[in-house]
Amino acid sequence: MIRFTETVLRDANQSLIATRLPFEKFEPILSEMDKAGYYSCEVWGGATFDVCLRFLNEDPWERLRKIREAMPNTKLQMLLRGQNILGYAHYPDDIVRRFVRASVKNGIDIIRIFDALNDVNNLKVAIEETVNSGAMASGAISYTISPVHTLDNYVKLVKEMAAMGVGSICIKDMAGLLSPKNAYDLVSAIKDAVDLPVVMHTHCTTGLAFMTYLKGVEAGADVIDTAISPFSGGTSQPATETLSFALREFGYDTGLNKESLHKIAAYFKPIRAEYLENGTLNPISLTTDTECLQYQIPGGMLSNLLSQLKMLNASDKFEEALKETPKVREDMGFPPLVTPTSQLVGNMAVQNVLAGERYKNVSSEIKAYCRGEYGKTPAPINEEVRKKILGDIKPIEGRYAETLPADTFEKAKETLGELAKNEEDVLSYIAFPPVTEKFLNARKAKEENVCTFSIEEVE
Ligand code: CO
Image (cartoon, rainbow, N blue to C red):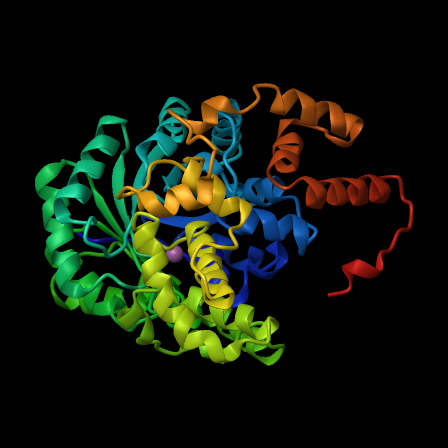
């Protein structure tokens, strides 16, 4: 049997239309999705939280509770960035624990937990609290290619996550770099090493995804992440119906209800057309980009590099920046290129090229990275480069999270005063302070029936 995780409400929504689906837009189809026979639906976490507050004027917690109510029979899943929760910085352990507990309390069944550096020290608190809260922790490998990302090292990571109590292992290939051959080898190695379900997650970016899933399933993968056809392909996941069709022919039971899939696809088709029409869905996101394979750089990062150089009137340096990126990545100890390391490495490469001298202009984030604030790097950072960047600043020892203030929650609660109605409001504020404050003020004004408008809100 092969099971499916439907990503239309989270990753597909995020990858194709910058997470701009408001709750009302998908509410009518939730009851049908609840009947489709999915292993789980990924509905929350990642960028959904930030975008709800920032652009959609929605309380993300309320969204989760409403989805829970409309889908009582399906496992609801979220994506969590380990010690970063849903933001980009590290949070103290008690905040991670509170956030996990609140997520489970509001309806989450499965939390997929990953770290940009695959540092288990950044995963363990989130995993432990998920298990203690009675939900399933899915331990994710941030997949990348480098001389130190060997099968042996991945297996070592998987065993460590298994020992922490994860209920499944996810191969998270955010860039679509996982090839059919490597998928076969990696899934086989994980299956040999641990007795846990293996979940595969990839993107169609490079065009490999369907073949990669097929070979992964042949090697024993248990669950694949797919998106209903109107929101599939390109930077999103491969289509649910297509894989269900192909795998059934090979004799796999998918547990999916064909009639439901048909209704769900029919529902999302006009929504896709609407977003194409209003420009939110860029047709370029739907094409195949094989350059990522050559440079092993995620597609999103390539376009970021280009737009950054354009803003600096230095588009002619694109080739040079492209060649510099793998060198910086090597100096930085081969981090997988995923948020936030993709931004760190990309910006550093641009700075090196523009300055004409390597590591002359260094951002505070790169300094923090070299200090060890992001965790342990896959390979050691180039010692000469580290000395040049850090100067007299001492690298930290042990877990950075443990050096963070213990009163973050109390302070935030105090700052918000009566604006915060519950713990969830405080957690939203800790994750995204100005955005949440604005949201909570608007909510209060609405409740008091005061008419307010803001020019900024016109998007
Ligand atoms: Co993804």
